Length: 174
Image 1: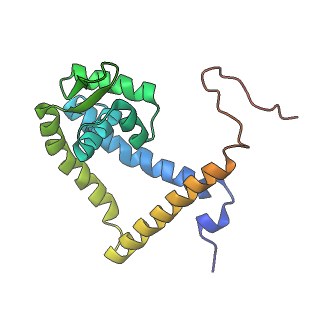
Image 2: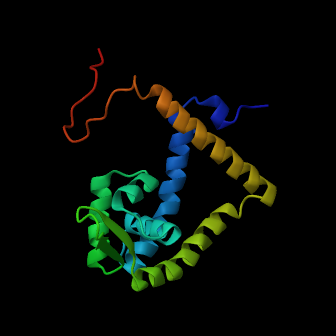
């Protein structure tokens, strides 16, 4: 029996992260077009709206942590959503330095309109799997997520830090 791509790992086309990235890119185009073309929001803004719907009012730092995004990028996204009147930023009375963000009624309405459309895209992609395959896929994805998080903790001290702003190259190959 021939090896599957995940067993073979012989080329970039076999690598899990590359394959997931390709799936995300193709499927993501539909969501981007729906969000940007249909509703004037970015996919990142959509993710914030969905998180706020699911979790209610949150401090921006907690939202960034929940989304696994850096605080600066989350802050810029929130500023855009406040300007679009989809998110309300409220300063807490007891500490003027802290704030909470929540959906406005217009933001809530946008979520209720857009979510079923995005769910339909996801359902159509998953429709190639039988129900038992979907359950196995979900379980495998959860295990892989846990392993990736554990591996990040294990390898983080020895992996080189990324320096994207400087555009510096890593070790020279000779």
